[in-house]
Image (cartoon, rainbow, N blue to C red; front, side, top):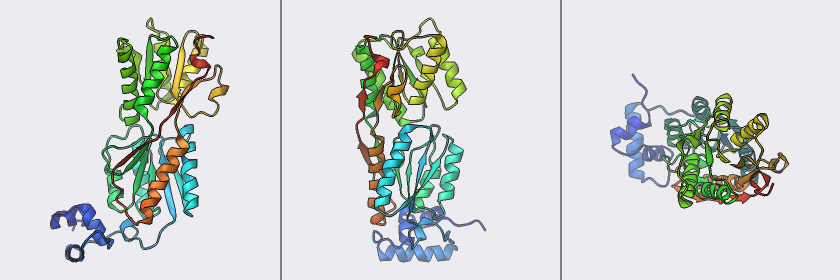
Length: 339
């Protein structure tokens, strides 16, 4: 006989999965009559819940997990630090998992956390996450999730981001104002909402200044370093070489720096560069890198604060909320028109 799950119970009762989950957890949000019906149907259908699942836990683990795409990005290190501050204030521990931008690893980690190991999760999705069943299952099982930076619009919960569209516009306009007329955009992923918004800001700035879009200047990069090197090198050696580059993430800016040195392209005289980056050593690069600096620490704190607010209320379903904390432009020598 196939194992009965929450979906089966919900379908047989013609109610939502979240209502079934709440009823089994004896949530105050569900009427006693509905609870009795759910429990009776569960017994009738032979429903055997996982005793370690979040919706049956009576004791807190006093631990939250933070899922990030990569540990080499300074943004995520700072965001973790902000979240840890709030966790310590609530006497909680944190577990840190890096998905390495791999959807299979991301799914495996969430499955591992579905056994009651943590009370809640802060998450920034991998760059190739395009379906969300593994995330939805966790929420159905009573483990709340708050997204930060790389978010899923399709999942109803709190989401903490920066002003990606406005910052993309600001970065591109800064290059235009410092003399660049042929600006390339280095994209990191077609699946990420942050990349889409930064790209839209880039396009809007070009449109405002009556600059015709050249599609060959929009470079779709990925998490494969060798492929990125090949694509950026091809761009920098083409007849239509740009005089400005807007990198959506810092690793693409650093790759561009290395290639400029190899190809003897002078920054900023021949090519001006700006990037989203929280690199602490940006001012030590030669030349120093102009950045859109994200408030990573504050974003991490805010994401954790929201998660703990709902953990205190013993609520696993967090209503949709979009919180934006603005980034700032930090001008350095890589876009200096006077060098």
